[in-house]
Image 1 (spheres, rainbow, N blue to C red):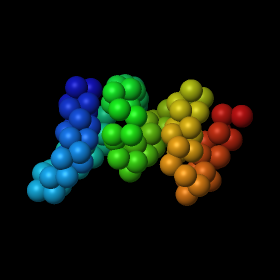
Image 2: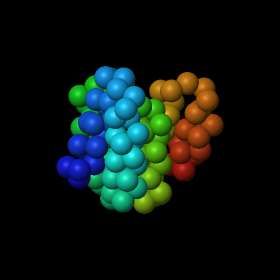
Image 3: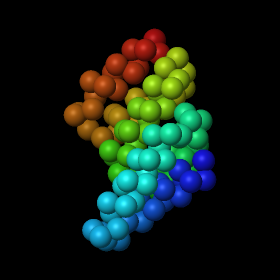
Image 4: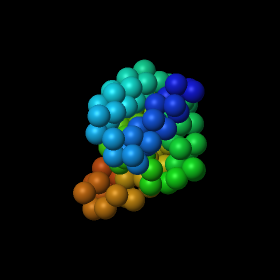
Length: 106
């Protein structure tokens, strides 16, 4: 889990710094770490980094993280609600997907 949190923080830092030279490595490392993480580790990472700064993690990284966690735990109503709420936070483009997650809970 620490590697995933470190990768997320590195991605955030690279985004904040707008250091285009470091961005591809930070993105690759984050994707690699989140791809092979457990759902529990993904959720722990999201909760930690979003608690520090709710808008710091890029939306694509949040969506990917929640998607992978939900695929591992498709019957977890708390996780599905959390993922849906996060999608609703990023405008109407994602509302259809958020509604689908909410429907799975009901």
